[in-house]
Amino acid sequence: MAKIKVVVVDDSALVRSLLSEIINQQSDMQCIGAANDPLQAREMIRELNPDVITLDVEMPKMDGLEFLSRLMKLRPMPVVMVSTLTEQGADTTLRALEMGAVDFVAKPRIGVSSGLKALGEEIVDKIRIASQARVSRHIAAVTPTLARAPETASGAPRPSSLGRLSTEKIICIGASTGGTEAIKEILVELPADAPGIVITQHMPPGFTTSFAARLDSLCRIRVQEAVDGQRILPGHAYIAPGGKQFSIARSGANYVAVVDDSPPVNRHKPSVEVLFKSCARVLGPNAIGVMLTGMGGDGGAAMKEMLDAGSHNIVQDEASCVVFGMPKVAIQHGAASEVLPLKRIAPALLERLQSAGAVRHRI
Image (tube, rainbow, N blue to C red; front, side, top):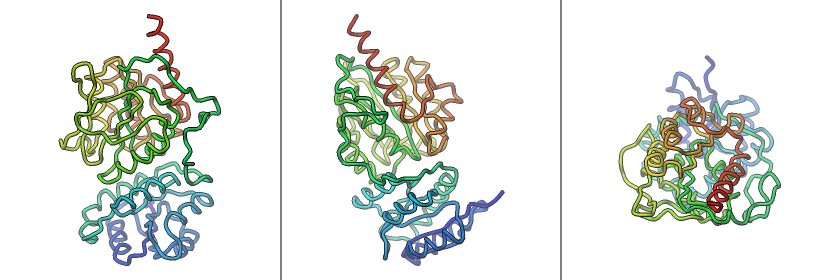
């Protein structure tokens, strides 16, 4: 089997050396070049035709975002960002994902040598995933800041209200690689009075705060990191904090968030399995499950439990996934009520909610 060819782009000689060493220790991949700036990287990409590049954000001559933007317009290819674990670094990383980067690794600010070596398994896993990812040409690199537009992505008028809906309904979303953009595409279509939404997106500590804030600025619903004990309200979306497990529970007539430090499940913290199991147990037929793009199988078995408990489940189709892992496993478990392209998921949610609201109103 041919090895995955990787070009490392970073202005730090130490980081280039460490990443090259980590990559070359793997039997299935090879670092075929290491560039200290985007201009050198451009020539390496032309000459060496890598399968994946790792890309630092802050570099001389041209910053990583500008280089990524040009790359995804002219020669789309899988990119794994290497970003600093700071608030500014998190914001920049989210912009990189918008521009088409497949995933990212947060490098430590201190103890770079030991820190990167400790992240070795995560780094090579993400390179492997990136090598299988679908990437497409990105012309519009950044999402417009004015997202409360009157039309859906399909051009149909956005509903300004879902009317008289049961506050019992909860939309439950799980995602991993490629999920930040998929989640955004769904949430921006929803009206301000949408049911409560609970989300687990695989993401490390330090990034989910920026992710929630970014979505909150774009959506008509309010979006925030989940806080232990808070009530799940209509018109709000709650994102699992990085490095914590997120589930829901019932408290009297209310649904509430449970955020704790319990161990990883399926190697993930937060884990979709944890959230979806609680949704099956607590919500039953009041749940609408959504499984989006991602590597692996986290949440597939629990999504089947949701279906068995009466939920309606929507799974993203292969053609629109960045990585068809978690949706594929959910389908294999028989957990899908519908399998839809990403652009059809928000309309399908609205149609189902409007139908449920109409039935409830007649009753």
